[in-house]
Image (cartoon, rainbow, N blue to C red; front, side, top):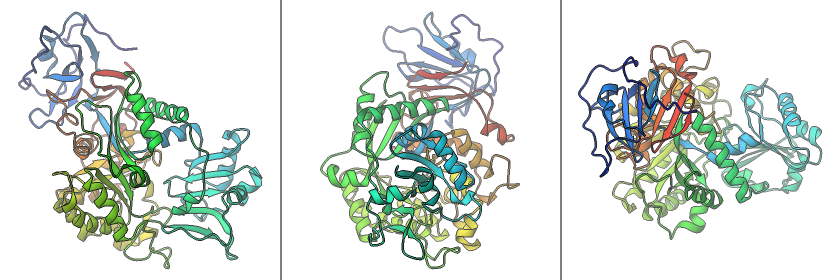
Amino acid sequence: MLALLLSTPFAGCRQSAAPAAPEPAQPLPSGQTSVSMIVRGGDVRTLDPARPRASAIAITDGVIVAVGSDEDVKALRGPSTVVLDAGGGTVTPGLVDAHAHLVGLGESLATVDLRGATSTEEVVRRLQAGAPAEGWVIGRGWDQNLWPGAAMPTHHPLTQAFGDRPVWLRRVDGHAAWGNAALLRESGIGPDTPIPAGGEILRDASGTATGVLIDAAMELVSTPELSAADLRARIEAAQQHILQLGLTGVHDMGIGSGADAAYRRLASDPEGLRIRVHAYAAESWFMQDLQEQAPDPLLQGSRYTLAGVKVYADGALGSRGAALLHPYTDRADHAGLMQHDEAALRRVVVAAMRGGWQVATHAIGDAGNRTVLDVYARALEHAARRDPRPRIEHCQILDPADIPRFADLGVIASMQPTHATSDMGWVAERLGPERLAGAYAWRSLLDASAHLCFGSDFPVELPDVTHGLYAAITRQDAQGAPKGGWLPEQRVSLDRALRGFTEEAAYASHREQELGRIAVGMQADLTCFGRVLDEEAPARIRDAPVLGTIVGGRPHHWAG
């Protein structure tokens, strides 16, 4: 229930900011003498260099009209003003996940969660407990690195448990899948099945498919399609989930036409889409249907925008699909999987840039990242937009020599802090020590003046934004290991971590003039925590409760 404090005096609220002159209030609409909402009593981190800290915010028509102390803003209260008490907790600009998959999160909430399973036996037990009584058995989240021996699985335990029912289980990173014999039969995958370019069918010594498909090989399987009603239900479930976690928006990567239609229907309903979604079309959809179309215009205050194209350069590190300049240390005959050769990648990127679309390219390995930087360097001359802001998604392993090229080319590094803390236990085995200098190199990119935005890649990682903040400033797991952090020279400050989820996420979507800071004239998107976020107590950041989430001046979640 909202805390409607219409008659509560402002005196006695916790003040975390030093006294400062109030920011000049924006004139109210004609005929109005008071504001629609006041958030007060907070440790307000504005991320506005003109006034970094405050305690109260006044809002009208979804826009911030005043920022200052509780006493400064008190005069704008009227009989109908809704006053929300932040209770001394930290208030930030609305936190945005700059790389996410909302439909994927909705699907993960509706299917069997395999995250954290420590053996194939545990996977089977979870499937038997959570799968529907008939039809396909679908799950996501397995990670062989957590199992004894860390070997890729085979179809046998799934075949024994489920017989003729197809089983389709995506790996935690989404770049590999594991199925049973029924799935292989239904998909026509046998000894003579050709390997798709950019993919791999794992086989045993006799040449028989083991049941694991990597990257492009997953396209050999046609899973049951979601209906329009299913898509809407998935989006609505995921939306409600992330609002409770403090997110006010996402950059949704790689959507198809069905998700686009669902978003547009939700956005047309005032109560439908309650977060801001900045979407990137899947490469296949763009190349088939969208090359002759322009991206959506960036309208102030909009909830849904289809603005860019998501392209794949390589695979993932966990499944050894990330493309490396030199072979994997733990697989000397293999250097990863490029999803395009350089010429083909350049054709896609140029087509998108010529059409005015922002390009966001998945690249994880050092070879994948170098190739994308090379492609961008040549493609930028074809860009229709004066400020195209191309992005590289993940940037997990970089050759240090390539780091300065991000700023030189105006390329945004879009990274996910929790990927580092999830992967740190086995990255050295994949790469060897010599390549760790460019591993998850947030600080190095910042020192080289690159733009760096943060996300989670949910449902690959959990969508809890507090986990991302904690990982960014500590590079430690939930138990505080390793002491001092993994590759601690790459840690960032709390302020810089917040900027990655706010100001830089806004910049990465060309919306920094209206989102990402708490300042007069900005959209009133706010994340309110139930305690002060303190860099000196990072563990308390990871489990900080979310008091409220406000989008466009409307509290869509409030626990006060």
